[in-house]
Structure formats: C-alpha cells, structure tokens
Image (cartoon, rainbow, N blue to C red; front, top):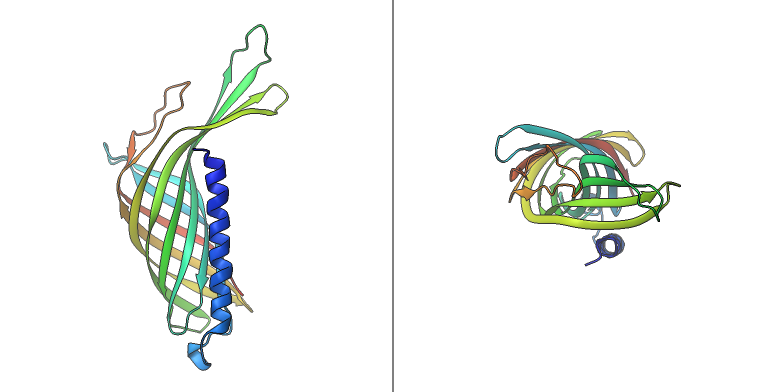
Length: 227
C-alpha cells in the first residue's frame, strides 16, 4: 500500500465532509439560538502529547499539531472531525557510498497520525465559551524514511513499518473571544485505546520504548476561526 496516496485520499475525504457539512448547516434551522449565524469553525492548534512507555511507565512528551472542523448544529451539541500529527523521534544517518554512487543520507521520523470523530457540548455564547468533548477514532505510528543524495535531492521514500489502533476519549476546554469570529482555543483531554508499537530505524538501534501505553493525554492551544 502506498501511504502518501492513502494520506492524500484521506485529506480529500475530510475536505469533502467539511464542505458537505457546511452546506447542510446553511440550509437547516429556523432562527434564534437554534439557528447559529455561522456554519462552523476551523481550529488549528499546537499540542503537547503525553504518553508512557508500556514497559517502564516512563513519561514521554512530544510535539504535535491538530486541525479540527466543528460544524454548527441547531442546539448546543455539535459534531466534527479532528486530524492530528505528532512526531516522537527524528534521526539522520550518513550511508557510506560505493564506487558507482554518490554519498547518501537517510533521514527517519517516527510519526503519530490520528483521526477522530468529535462530539462537542458547547452551550454558551459569551466571550468565554467552555465546552466538553467526546471522541472516537484511529491512531497510528509509522516510520517515515527518506534518502537524499549529496545535492540534497530526495532519491527514495518509504514507510517500512507501521502500527494502528482504535481509541476513544474525552476533553474539556474553552474558547476565548479575541475578535469577530476569532477565538483562542484551549483544551486538555485523555484518550484510551490499544498500545502502539514503535518501529525502529532499520540502519541503527534506538533507545525509544518498544510500545506506547494505551492511555494517552494531550494539552493544546491554538486559534478557532468561525465561518
């Protein structure tokens, strides 16, 4: 399976869901509180992802980003989709050249992509809008491996190893109004699911744990833009 193609198809599907949901929101409702003036909101956040070594329980903190679409439905309960990407490790290793080829460099990254369906309870319409969420989705770990020549041009790319699991979880947070249709979004939550295997780079040993525990936490901060 070609993962770059799979990721592009997943992104296209998410975009189609967003556009379809936004069009449906424009056509629904009757007015007042139960008819929001905007069809939805996009949130872009930076996140700190907290995980544990399944064997030693050592805490691991790694960076990530999250993109969330929340559609506005009549009433205080709204649905959406969230895409996330974390990075646990990044290494570079110089591969020795042979007599017929130039020096090459292999770069590996251990990435943690996620996709979740989100249900948000967001009943308030003031300057500070607290909310709670439930979510269910899929999480994965994959080893991204790229080879570059001595000119910096990429010569090979592959996903030599990956693992995936399902998860569910909750989160609580608040949106703070900064201006017309612009909010600061703060959120903390936990997810529960299966353990994730952490594949090792093929060319050198790693000190990373073999698995991430099934219980994972995250804290995020970013901006929400209402449409």
